[in-house]
Length: 382
Ligand code: PMP
Image 1 (spheres, helix red, strand yellow):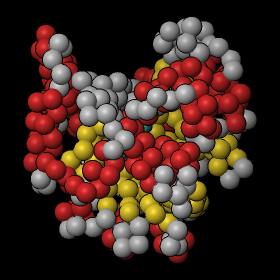
Image 2 (cartoon, protein in one colour):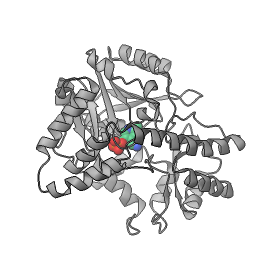
Image 3 (tube, rainbow, N blue to C red):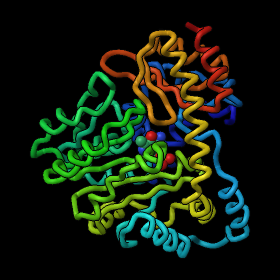
Image 4 (cartoon, rainbow, N blue to C red):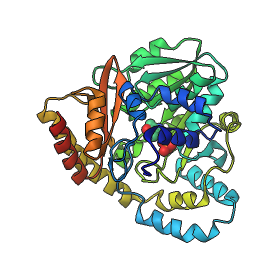
């Protein structure tokens, strides 16, 4: 990362890009407000000279990607950089439609699933009333909805740091227009029994639109992955989003998609730039979409590296969410600002979240070596 680009500008520029909107400074300020903890806001004003070369355990990135197949496809497509991606987008939609078992009209592409969360937040937010989610969760959709005109109904997690579907069910009112579910959830990494989630989605979709964010689903073994796309096929009022940023390791290339009824897609696509994805990115995504070997490699290495962190937390008797993903969430054993500053000085980036008047650490899983070095540095600051 360029040393002249301080953290504030970095977050602003990432938000502006992800938004797919012209994000003015005041818009980004507003949108930044919710996901950034108090400790992080203090840090935003400090330019760091250490971000360059730091171990990035702050954005749930895949340290093993892009795969060799994706890299080869990128190189091959370079010479077609002079062409618009009209045909490539259509072809890629068809490929995804075949994978998901739906017609291509049920697929909507985005420059990362973040762009689709923004569009949905705008579309629903403009109508006012409220959007509901468990809290904390990945806040982008709700931030945009709030910025437009809606209120965000937040339902706290249960004691195991999981979505509390019973409380969510009883909290639905006639004002609730959209319910966001994230399974596995970010920032906690926890997974709720997928049959419970499916029953919830089915029932809740009778009262409001349900948005199921499945960004981390592929961290489960293939036989364990149960997508909510089945409910879309049954005609339920559900939007499902997936991304190439996580298990496929293409976060910087920006490819994500939604599976939903074509009428819903028309509604969201009003806020969309039709050609926001480059054909190089599409080629990389196409090349790795069924690269089971690469996904397996990521899953296996991630689980080993995650154990380094959770074994350490066990040893220290620090509780944490039972993570099935590439990040772990636990109560901050010291004040957040000290943790962020000291860890940054030692060359590690991580996140602090605010929840229930306390500070919580979210540490993404890097390589085994990075995690071994991380726990040593973390232990030193404690
Ligand atoms: N959903 C969840 C749950 C996430 O954690 C993230 C990013 N960390 C996203 C969506 C957006 O990712 P992308 O835009 O890269 O697809």
